[in-house]
Image (tube, rainbow, N blue to C red; front, side):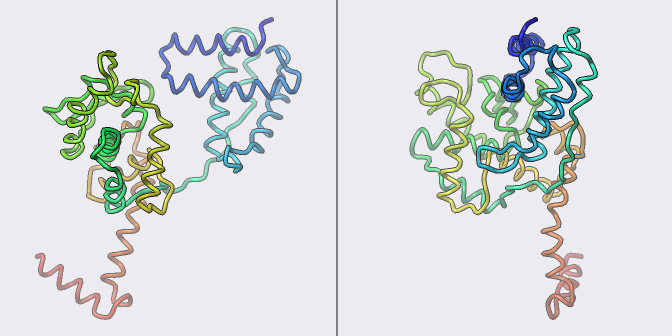
Length: 320
């Protein structure tokens, strides 16, 4: 019988043939790889040796695993491992290699519901943008990337996946390839579009040369800009700007969503912009408006400030 590692390679080939995204395939290689390394340590090399007790032991071990920062894995990370390994087990079961009952052994853990983290105010976002020098090709490129992320709410993978021809300057839109390889059209704001056009016309040609690279955002070697380079540079600029929270590429997406909802945007339209399947995710963002509610409460409630109630009424009457 083939080894589990051999079946893993077959599974990855199967995913490629089904047109899974590079991210999903990379994630499967990583998570299933962790599982298989554990299995080998336990003396399990082939699928016929797998038993329900082994999967239960692996999930217990997974719950005790620490992240690269030495912290316990979050419930979401654990569930991502469970989901990916279950996908591998289903592949084995569909091929008649293992029993289907193995796919029912490991269970998802309950994930706590938190408000979206690392959301920046517009003022903080302006300060972050201002920390990037635009008098160099590298700085101008990074500023353009940040502006597009904040304006459109697209994911970092969607930004880095943009190719020439995906941006329609005349209509101020961009075509992105989201999760599940689903395409959607997103608007690009005026400021972001100005930076993007300036980068494409003046900066990108220098890096690309005659290589024929299709990616819009490229590194100094003229190749598609890598994620970890963006993350490293983002942390540098966030530190220079004195941003008090941990800023990640997803911070731009969260901040864009929050500002749109605070500005009264229709939740259905925001859902379409972000490429979500349902409105459930946006419910957590909507809760952030409690900050605005508290400000109004403090400004208008008579117990909060002397004369506050009359001041608020005067403003309402004046508006009428």
